[in-house]
Length: 96
Length: 137
Image (cartoon, rainbow over the protein chains, first blue to last red):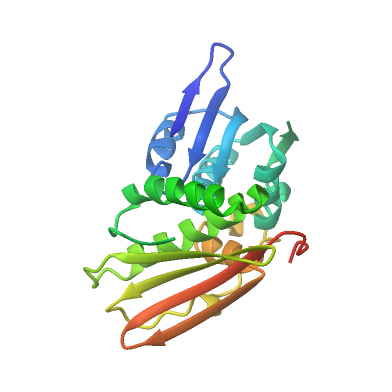
């Protein structure tokens, strides 16, 4: 199960498993964002390359206007995947 | 555990549930779950995406081994494609040069403790192992 929503503070909140089956819904949601944003990943249990692709595409689009995604409350096992992928050098990441 | 799955991303949740049941039944160290889930998904998705000529289901086998787990995925009636020979991904490249392509197999190769590819009679079979305390390879 995967959920993505915008909270009252304008922060994108994701939870569950962001896999290849869920990536299109996540991409559609993030494509609707016009500005740089923070993604709270406290509830994110799992991410695969499909999910990484969603983050990368969105980050590149938003960076064109100066500022991209900021990933906060990132659990260690998710951050390990970011480090393997070199995403730790591309995104502003705050551990949980 | 040995089971066949339809060639659909919709089966990923079923594979995850079966993997969890296998880990529980065989008392496999749960710290291996992330690596196993990710590698199984990446290889399964690769087969579904690129071996479109096959109508056969994809078989996944999981076996407990000392200190970990061995996993095999078999795809039937397909052309040869060796994931272990996948091109390198430059994870140090700047954002402008990065694209999502190839990252999945890169992660599989990065996280597996061993990985082996076989191709016989139009069947592709990829086997990998993950063990605890194997270090970050």
